[in-house]
Length: 159
Image (tube, rainbow, N blue to C red; front, side, top):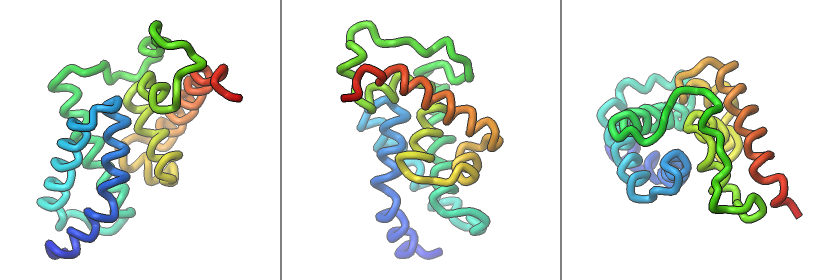
């Protein structure tokens, strides 16, 4: 794949990738943009490793997820283990005033990632599991758990 073809792929995927990373970084636009740039640079360097076994987007999101996890570990942004201890309603906001982005920010990173890939980006569960390097059953658990938490957060927000 030459630089021009890769440029076309970047233009096709950059907006969605940045949105995915903004959700993971809980709305930190600058950090999300930095991670997106690192993702595209790494993808370009490793472009020969893309075999076409899966969709290019799944491969790209796998790199982005990996970049996010490395950054989160380095900065100790949030616990990355998968338990429900981190599910806490924000004290300063009433449930009725929470919007979807704020509610998503209350979820753990794997839940935010799974919901974003599967619902916001319309990625099939199989591709999302591949992108997040997790078994399909684990991804489905993150989706189900995340949906239930969102329901709880947004239950009073519905008209």
